[in-house]
Image (cartoon, rainbow, N blue to C red; front, top):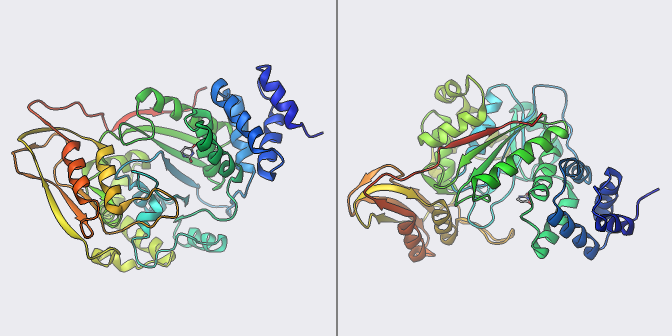
Length: 424
Ligand code: URA
């Protein structure tokens, strides 16, 4: 017999651990609408204050996954994906998907759009003329079989319970709960039908998790919950106190990704790609240019202009103007605050506040100097691409304030802070 929402709410009052059947009934009721919004809000408030146990989190995640479509793929090489909790200049997915495919893995990457100061993988890819992020399941099947990787948006109904609960969490201030965040992130990733997941949990001003302690809590919860749901998982906690790489925007991030895919690009981007790829041949595949060719195939399989690989000027968003930002004093660059740079790019039009807002592919920030560099007053430290001066004044001020210049070196976080594996 189905457990009623009244009984579920009463048992929560008694402080008991939720039985798997009760969590399943709750998620079913959220999905079919038989659990009312106030009832769901009461459940969320309880889960927020009491914190779901690891066993409850695992069941919550599985039921959220099963509330919608779960993608299935034919037999073949291992299915792997990466999820990042989001950061400024984080373009790793654009490099990792073709790299893993070139290494013989299959990468069914369902990705999202940017919100606020962090960019979104789909927005960046849409800077490529013709690139489609709305592939249907038969098109995804074809792309995975022919290229070994795709990066596209959600198809069908992925984790519809999460859509309802995420909106309610926003309204009831219950977003910052590690088990609820974990269920929300993993339900959408497990629904991709992957066998292995690499989680990049960012730490620092530009990240969702500002402190190392919070990031470790999220990383461990994600890994344990994924493993409890039959997905091999490992997390890397990585630095987001400064932007990743030099380019922050959309088209400029595609260019930087292509540089990395042919063995060049900024050292920190390459290092992070290699850490997350976790494969002994990853560096040589980048250096050979084979990963860049795989990227071209992926772009063409998704309707995009593969010619951008040879001629990046074909990326969308031309017609911007440039302004150089100069060091206000001489010294060592102690820090470049990720959040400030993210806000600068957002204000120029590279990001969006609401899911339906457009982004300007051509605007953004390029860092010309970074942490540890010595500069003299007046040196160029950043280049801003703007359109008709939109957001230019505040962006320049944000960039100036992002650069911490001093006489002694700063104390940046190591790029890889910690690896997190499943608890026994
Ligand atoms: N991202 C998600 O998908 N869900 C959360 O709850 C937080 C971040």
